[in-house]
Length: 266
Image (tube, rainbow, N blue to C red; front, side):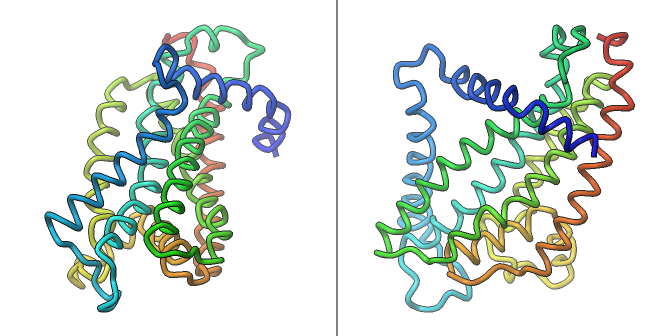
C-alpha cells in the first residue's frame, strides 16, 4: 500500500522527470529525439542483412514458408525485451550515487528514481516496438490482432524489473562493485536467453536452466502475440505477475529500510 500510494502521489513528478530524462539523453545532438527512432531502425536493418543475407539463418519449427527477413524480426522482439530489462538494471546501481543532492533533500521521494529509469526505458522500447510493427507489416503485409496484448505481456516484466531496480539502487550505494557485476551478468544473460535461437534448439538437459531465466517466458510470449498471432499463456502470465509483485514488494521494502544509511555513506 505504501508503494502504491508513493507512486500515485508522485505521478506528476515521475512523468516530468521521465520526460527530462529522455530529452536529456539527446540534448545537444542535431537530430535530438529522432535518434530514439533511428537507432532501432538501424539495428533492425543490420539484423536483417546479417542474419538473412550472410548467415542465411532460419527459425526452427516455423515451416518452409518462412521469409528471409523473418529471423531478423523474431530476433528483434527478443532484443526489445532484453533491452528494457538490461537498461534499467545497468543504470540502477548508480541511480542514488549520481543523485546525491536528492538524497540530502528529505522532501524528495528518492524511491521514484528507479521508476523514472523504467519510464525512460519504456519510452525507447515503445519506439522500437513501433519500428518492429512497421517492419512486420512491410515484410508480411499484415499485422496480427493479438498485438493488442503486448502491453499485458510486458507488464509482469516491468514489475519484476522495478523490484530488482530498487534492490540494486540500494546495494549500489554500499557496494560500488555492484555496477560492474551487473554489467557482466546482463551480458551473460543475453546469451542464456533465447534471443538468437529458439528454445527448441537448446539440449533437453540444459533447457530447465534456460526456462528459469526470467526473460525467457516473456520473450516467448511476446513472440506469440506479435509474430505468430497466438493468444498469450494467461495462466503463466498470472503466476509470473504474482511472483514479480512479491519481488517488487521485497525490493521496495529493502530500499525503504536501507535508505536511512544513504546520506551517511554518500
